[in-house]
Length: 223
Image 1 (tube, rainbow, N blue to C red):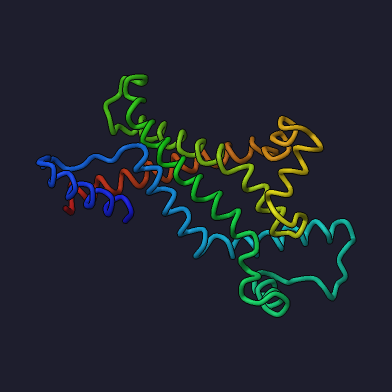
Image 2 (image 1 turned 120 degrees about the vertical axis):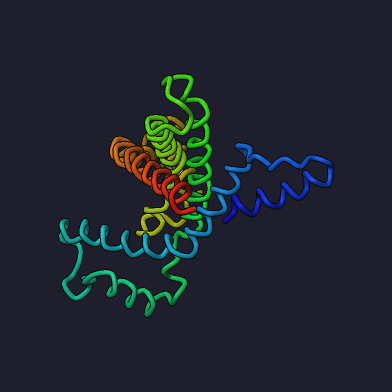
């Protein structure tokens, strides 16, 4: 939706200057559109869902350490939601939403920028035509890498805030830098990068390749 809006708007602006060709989105346009979509999804859906998930994961850790009384155990997502509403109100489900918003807006922007870069430059490397399956898979892998390269440290901060182990993302970053230095802080925030990239890049490749194949089918057979 955001891409269509930008294309329509800028095409109309181009026509005012006498240029009647359809407007082609630039990398900055893809960054903006991806960031808007990521931010919208984060606020409406991702933030409360990940809050509930983080609570259950943190609870499993405390149970294993023997730090949770049986009466305080939350039995599944609905129990987390009910107890959060009683103690913190509806906005308690959006704890850590600020970090989630930043993570998904910047991350999704990077995702689509890397995908476009891959589609544009991979053909000269692979020798396959633009839009080929090989290049789409490669661009998808790049998109997944781009997302998690930007998002992984923010995801780590988001989890710390949502589970109550940190009061804010900025204070946590400041504490880590003062304690471990910049390199040490980065190392802490990128912990688990192997799993993030190992999951994120292939899943992005599968998702984008499937989307491209279905879109091509609908466009050529049903359009």
